[in-house]
Amino acid sequence: STTLTLGAISLLQRASAYPINRRGGSHLNNLVKRDDIEVVDKVYEEVMVSEEVVVFVNQFGTPFSTTTMPNVESTIWSTGPLTTITPSHSTTTPSTTTTTTTATSSSKTDPIVPPPNPPATENLAKTSSTPTPVVNPIPVPPKPEPTTHSTTTSAALPPPSPSSPAPTAPTVPPAPPKSVGYGFSYSPYMANGACKSAQQVSTDFAAIPNIQQYSIVRIYGTDCNQVATVLPAAKAHGLKLMAGIFDLNTLDSEIATIVAAAQGDWSSFDTISVGNEIVNSGTAPASTVVAAVGSARSQLRAAGFMGSVVTVDTLVASRANPSLCDGSDYCAVNCHPFFDGNVEAAGSGDFLTTQMGTLRDALSNKNQRIMITETGWPWQGTANNMAVPSPANQAVALSSIRDAFASNPQDVVLFTSYNDLWKKSSALTFNADQFWGFLGYAPS
Image (cartoon, rainbow, N blue to C red; front, side):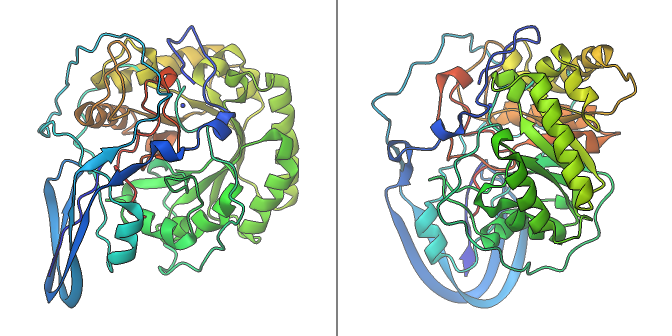
């Protein structure tokens, strides 16, 4: 049979001189309400038995790889039109210039096609016996331009689910950790904010194309038992984990959760981050955050972790409060060209490079490592002056970023792997919070 599954592809922070509170700790307000759910009107299925050819396509529907499977019973999917239920309280977005300059890749430019409808989560999961990964390969990097800081989507995480799923053993033997490679961020939540199981996380990781180009996966907290559920999937693909402590008020318990998940083996942990954009959001002053980093480091060292312990904030907040970097084992900052508003997609890489230079000038240790722990470009949303969300611009921006970090890919984390449908759309972040996934919609 022929199985074809088509899928697709943080508060506002302006120019580098004007940090604005971002979503930070407001994750409780970012859960998707029922009136924000996208549903598929119709799903038809037809069972056939024959030789199975699996066709892998990108988020624009263009085939890029095929493989033949033995005779199996499979299901052909056909979905009806996507219906969006718009909440009555939806807010109008700020008026901005929407003139888009679509930069082209040095090799070729994918056609600008609206992303396909997301899969009907429940129906597809129940009927498809062997779901085909939905992937969006990153094009060849064009020459970049500067980029900025982050005000986007990662800082916000949903509250812990009442019943966190128990992790299961990985089905793939652990691969040797890679020393060099790009990083990517991942959030183990379903569209309704529920926790993903270890098997669902494994499915998401298995669908990442060319995963060997990555060496680090970043997560943001310990809710949903996510350290224990993501760790096996990371190990299976030779990835190291950048685990996160999200709330300083629960510092000790979150450390205990991470220690328990490690089970004495820290070989797959690269970094433990303490907080995400806490100073930028106004949640706590830099002195409080630095003290928390010191406390966390002491507890983690006592538990056997000898890796890096840092805090993550926006590049703007860290430049204004260099003690955040002084108190960290390396300087970890989020920086998003999109929120600058004066940077087009093709200038993302150069913008990041320029902003990192201004940050380094403010550091006590001019030789301290700087890592961009979150950067990317949305494929859908409202234009922020010169920054226009679109699938083509996302691809161009990511290519520019990759090009800028080609010699040190371990110093950048791409935001984010899959779309975050559990987040709440907001005009303050250009209605783009849900659509930063460079791999489109998660298969699980």
